[in-house]
Length: 386
Picture (tube, one colour):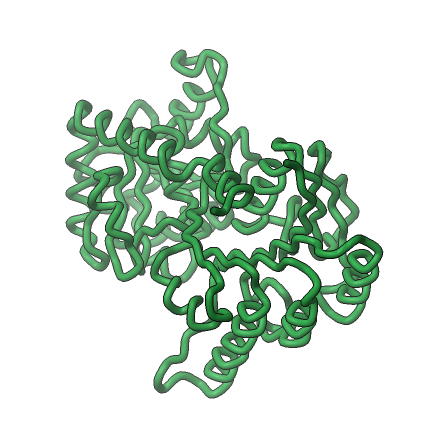
C-alpha cells in the first residue's frame, strides 16, 4: 500500500552533512516503494537544481524553521486531508535559532491531527557540571524541545540504543520506540577496470599510495576526532611503511597540519577534499584498510564506518561509551579501547601485514552491513513498523 510522507529535515542536498545524505537516501527508498514524498528543508545559499528523484518533491523553506516556515508548512498541510504522515529528522541544532528553536517544536506539538514520527539522530546538548551558564541553558532548551516533539510523536526511532531510555522518558506512555541504525549514504560504485592500473581505483592507489599499502580515513576532522588521528597516523606510517589518504571535508587542512607537525610524513599523507558520491566510492575502494577512531567509540550512527563496511574494507576503530555490544559480538571491525593510540596502531599494522586476516575481516564487515544496516532495512522499518 502506497502512502504519502512529509519529511522535515534541517538539511538536504546540495547542502552537505550526514543528515542531508541520510534524508535523501530515505526519501529515495520510500519513493522507490511507490510512496509520494515531500521533503521540507531550508533554502540553499545559491539557486541549485533540486533532486530529480522520481516521486520526491523538495520544498525550500523561506527561513530556518521560523514563523514564515511554519506558516508555509501549515498552509500546505491544511489543504490536504488529515492525517498527514510527518517524519521529522530530529537534530536540535538543525532547526536554527542557535539550537534553541522552541517555537518550531511547539508548532510540531500543535499538529495533533497529523501522524508525527520522529527519528532522533541526536537528542540534546549535555548538561555539564562547571560548564558556562549559556551551555547549560542550551542543554535545558534542548530537553524542552525534545520533550515537546517527543510528546507529540506517534512513533519514535533512535539512531543508537544508548538514547532509547532517554527518548522513552520524553514520549507519551505507550509510544513505541525502535532502533533504526543509520546506513551508508555512499552507493558502492562498480568502477570499470578497477583492478587494473588504468582503472579509476588503480589511478587513485598510484596517486596516494605510491606503491605502498593505503590506509584511509573518512570524516570531517573535528576537534574531538582529529587528535586521535594525530596521535596514531605518524606511528602507523613509520611502523607499517604505508601511505594514508584522508577523505572528506577538512581533509586538506588536516593533512597540511599533520605534515607541518611531522615533516617525515611529507609525501606519505594525501587528502582528497570533499568528493561527489561516485568519486568517494572509488577512493574508499582504493584503500586497503580504514582507520576510524571516535572519542565515544564506534556506534551505529557513525556513517563513516558504514561507508567502509559497505565497500568491503577492513575497519579498525575504537570501543567506547556509545559502542553497542553487536560490534564485538559480530567481529565486523577490529576494536581497540578509546584513548590507546598504541593499540590502534598495532591493530592496523597487524592487519596490513596479514592479507588473509584483513580479507576475512573485510568480508565479515560487508556481510554484517548487508544483514543489519543496508538502507532496505530502514525503509522496511518505516513502511512496516510492526
